[in-house]
Length: 183
Image (cartoon, rainbow, N blue to C red; front, side, top):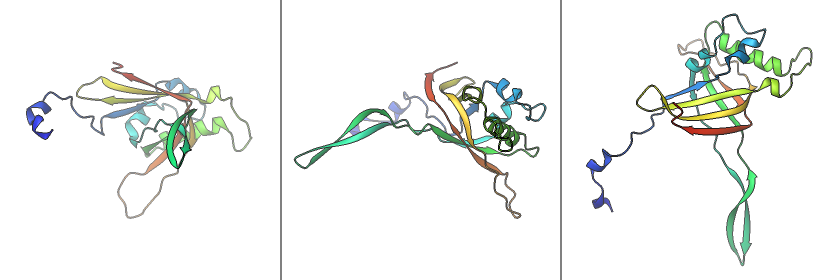
C-alpha cells in the first residue's frame, strides 16, 4: 500500500485545519448590551479577541449492550448522550469588562441577593465557532443555540508570574448546527 502513495499525491490534498484558526462569536451583541450592569461601551467582540482556547463538545448517542451465549455487542440507543456543555478559556482584561459581562449574565439568570430569576428564553443566546483555512472567510461553522452561562471563574493569581489571568467559563446549550462554507 505504501508503494501506491507518494509525496506528489500529497500536493492534491486539502490543507490541514490549524488549531489557532478559530474565532468564537456571540453574534447577538444586543443581548449583552441590554443588561443594565454591563460596563458602558462593552462590545461582545472583546470576548472573541480574548478567547484563548476551547474544545468543542463531543456529539454522542447513548449505547446499550446485548449478550448472546457469552458474546457481547454494543448497540446505539435512540437517545442523545451529548453533554450539552463546553468551556471557553478567556484572558481577563485589566478593566474586568469580559468578566463583568459574564457575571452580569449570570446575575440576570439568577440574582443571588434578591432571588429573582429570568425566564429560560430570556437568558439564552447564540454562539458561533468559526474555523478558518487560508482566507478571510470561515470554511466551517458550528452554531450553538440556546447558549447559557453556567460558571464564571475568578481566575488564579501568582505574585511571581507575568502571564495574563485566564479562566474557564462553562456554558450549556440546547442544540448545535454545523455549516460548511458559511461565507
